[in-house]
Amino acid sequence: MIIEKTLSTFLKIFINRQLKLSKTSHNILPNPGMGSNYVLYVHIPFCESLCPYCSFNRFIFVEEHARSFYQSLRKEIQLVSDLGYSFKSMYIGGGTPTILMDELARTIDFAGNLFGIKEVSCETNPNHLTPEIITSLQGRVDRLSVGVQSFNDELLMQMNRYTRFGSGEVTLRRIQEAADRIPVINVDMIFNFPRQTAKMLREDIQCVIASNANQVTFNALMASPGVEKSLENAMGTIDYSHEEPFYQIISRDLEEHFFPVTSWTFSRKDSGLIDEYIVDYEEYLGVGPGSFSYLDGTLYANTFSLREYDHKLNSEQMPVTGFHLFKTTDRMRYRFLMDLFGLCLDKKRFKKDFGMPIERGLPLEMAFMQTAGAFEKNDESAITLTQKGRYLMVVMMREFFSGVNRVREQARQALTQEEQALLVTCDRAPLAGSAKTLPQGGFGNLS
Image 1 (cartoon, rainbow, N blue to C red):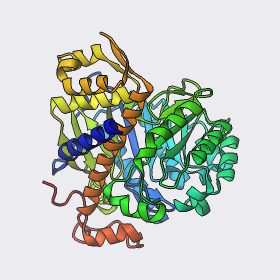
Image 2: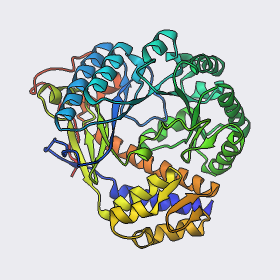
Image 3: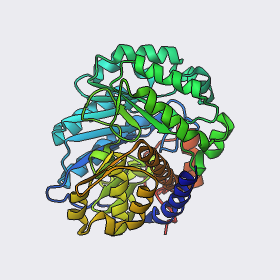
Image 4: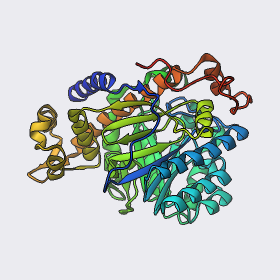
């Protein structure tokens, strides 16, 4: 635990210092680089209910708001195309992307025709595994990630998911029925819930194996400040001392049926598609309110405001309102984190891209991981990980995404009180209107 606590403390300090956005009025993304490969991330920010642990930009579903949003979303995708970007892969997250299936299908087809996209990953919830929705997804989606979180009914009730999305038994049956209709089904799980026991976790793993899903992702529960109180009220306080033993149970119990493709994603076969698009693509472009882009060493953030998003796109403007330029050392650290999370770091590529070997670029990080017993192989060409190393990457990614969640919370706090109330209650006030009547959201007073 000493190594993990030291790592968590360092990362919290470092990420809080480095991952800060500055406001920008220059809302145009850079032109695509020659020979660069990008993935398109599409954020659909609507849910039927709000889970207490989730920090993503999401709002209670109201159909008129969602349909207005989709019109703006397709305008943004067109503007991205006009800049010259092209994509072979698209990842659709949320929120719950399948909450308005006709608009989602229209958007997938629109982007596919515009860019010639070859592979699409999409998130959904268990109650959307209906014959109608699955039929609409067939031929459009290559990988469907189902947000199960747990098959345990007690935990589902604590998460406010049991009544809305169905029991663990019902969810298992739905996944089994859908498994042969979509090329890749991923079961998206969370581990280390406050009241989760080792027995509950093992039962979850057995359900995953019985589901016939191709992949499973076991995300470590993370609580950023904005959801910490709601999570504690609903489920209790996280005990991080359980995290590594639980991770060992996951790795051991899955090994006869799955093999690791990232530190927390396991696959029955090499599908070529995984949950974390940031592993296969170092650079990505995000569309939708609250989405992020990482392009040429700079992080860009779209407005988190639905009103401002609609207003900007109706005015033919990109909805980018915040950015952060990473220094070279920070870009090295990002490469280090993402490559090792994907289980292999190419040292020759690192040296080519940064002009120095990783031992010189990141001496402290290399020394720490070596001392911690994280490296299975460390030769002139590559670094691979031991199981201990894979778990340390889980800790790093937990802290990294917690830092990203704090940025999301920073963005939401910068909205006006009027709009914060609107977005929480999802009042049926119109989202469209003149600039004079719209509360201006975005990143407010960010420096």
